[in-house]
Image 1 (tube, rainbow, N blue to C red):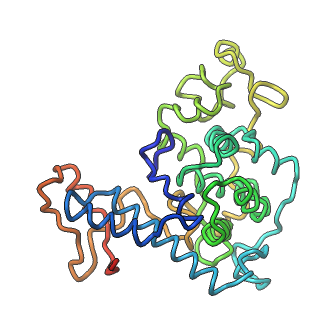
Image 2: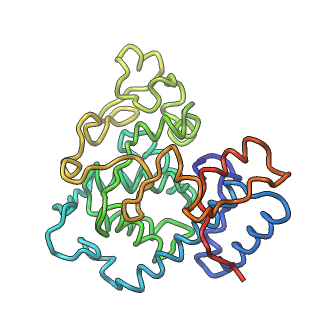
Length: 303
């Protein structure tokens, strides 16, 4: 779910779901059948979890109608903590689209989107947070670009998530720390180097923060960082927190969903009524049993 390279970290069902070629209920039923016959694990959990979020945004759009396309989202023109004047700098917006922001994780994801029409779940959260919070660009330009380029474009999920990433649904504004996310989810820099070949010879220590290299090290690595050079300097100051965060707070958990956050410790081990997944499945190893303790189970059924 948090992977970015290869074919197996994601189901790749999204385009077929978006175009009505497969039913989300069918996928959920197959996940349940797999769990009953084989094993419950984080993969099956997160597949169903994301299907439920997909349904949520359909109801969200049904409730709020075309408000999800307005600058202030469902909050309207009233004063709220995340309200701000949006930037509309065409040069900066184009740099984001082309993967030339100077932040390798953002650039790698945007280049992958441009080349393939796909971006990972982790990537989508990061580039949306960066565009709406760090760059402070009008979030609707981001939503519009995704609508134009994603193979799995779904009007409800796309605009609902972008509206939320911008903080226009209420609740907590959730900013992703791009450098930290880079180091957490692309530790060795393999993904960044795949899509940003300019950085292929940059040492691991600097691959996520290439602007920190000295001129001598740049020369040694065969890449020059800066305006008009091999790879751009950061489009925003990486050492300065966006002004809006002084009002809204923020963090690096899950974005785009009403400010709900999931930290590295997971979400707990079940509800108050002992609503846990069965940890006694003989097909599940010790490590998997431990993993499952961090997952909550709802009361939904797929008949």
